[in-house]
Image (cartoon, rainbow, N blue to C red; front, side, top):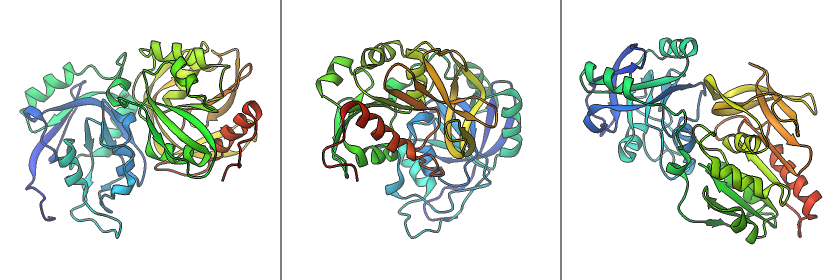
Length: 374
């Protein structure tokens, strides 16, 4: 047992349908011995730190399907946000000691410091198979009595119809300096990841604004382009955000990722629906319908745009696992979006060309960037 690691304490995970999984507690001690949230599973083989610190997991309990988690510790350089927003972490086998020259902490210590509870020793294969059959659902875990956990799981509302963006967005605009390009970009923070910001700064200066920022305030910044970020939960409650996007459409080039994709699509009339257990992983095959190429992609979403519900946009990318919509391009205005994560933090880099596509779109609408793009 690594230095500072607590002695094992029995814990249990209970799903809303009554399924029970036994394990041991790690991470932070939840209030009253109970943590609740929507239980989902992620199939990445590495990158657990980036997943846990992705704000898109607000309201959710993350189950890792890979057997061993924590092997290479934690590096401050790999955080995707200033803190985790997930409700908890479920693993099969938490590494007793980590090994990496980059590590400055271990997973257990990170979760304890940031107030995130975890449970280890869970049969994650059985849990994942159950979630695949029954769908993602509310759950509760912790050290409380089983009856308490059962009641908590039954009372957890999940993410449907809940505005989770307001819990993760920043309070005031933040400017991040360019790392090469000369554009000025405005990025809506619906739960934006650090790796996305890093890619955008290659194009130019990035002004990251709260989700509640008005279209008028955005246009007053005279941006070359507007970025709609990833974020957690259901796009349906974000009515005011869609109204601001509507006011920006046609006035400035727009690029959206994940929740930003769903909000762009919803603004132009698309329907969205909840997937049975979502797409969470770093190995989803997506076909680019323009080139015919297959890209292996990083994904993290529970909601999806309904195919055929947008007459003013063309389908550009399709998920080859279930044929769901993965990308659109507006036909009558300069805007496009993808459901997956081309920044890949973590994940493969096949789709990073989309950031170059954003520059191409801005060049056609706003003219070439002065000084070019690095």
